[in-house]
Image 1 (cartoon, rainbow, N blue to C red):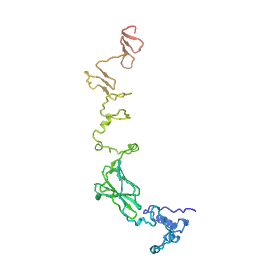
Image 2: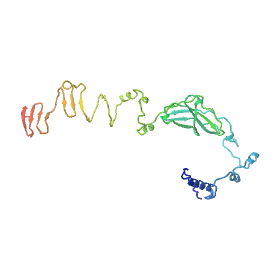
Image 3: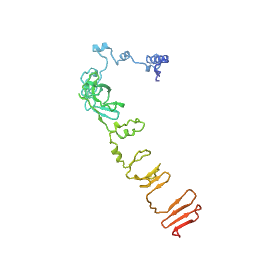
Image 4: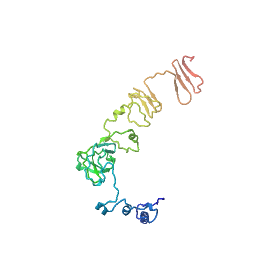
Length: 315
């Protein structure tokens, strides 16, 4: 037995009305049984009556039915949920939690035989008269996606509706405001540059001083690249430092106090102690002077032997 393929109906435009009508005709021809496999045609109410699955209205009114009795487990035989006008119960254990932009509403399932769905209502004030219907659920959950409106406080109500369109009472007269839900590690993993709008974390969203205390307790920090206007470092271990301009003491005063080392290599100190040999050079000629703890030597450009030597002549 093969399955008859029917054409897909394209979205109607001003230029494809002929193609749309041809697709509709192809589907109707198959469903009416004019073409294709007979197994793919529509079933009519007459077909159901002739097969004994359904009965005519006249037979139903007369009370004479040729249909077999249907046993419904847990219910009295012949029960029709669409005609049961019992008022649904009040929803129990309604819980409303919020994340960054989503509000999750949860309740216990309705314990009555002809439950159809649950209505979810939302209002700006804690008064059911100001609330509006925002959705329906056939489970015990509803997620309200507030998007950029996530900072607005709303109140929520839920109520059951039966298959007979009978509305039950709201879960409570007063609405339920969301409680803040915990953000787990999976949510934090998505807080990257692609998901944070530029400039969205502004001053009115970060309490004054709320970050300063946290930064003060950064025992170990890795900063790949950064620009600091003013940095205060109590104790630092630096593997390699590149000074773009000048390194100097806080009390430096030219010719008077403190010390300074410039980018060009100039240095000013009040005094200095060298535990090795001081090598003083001028230009690239090779001429230089060395000062050690016991001897002073002056070399010419050939650097072959000292031209002048003071102190220990055997050094």
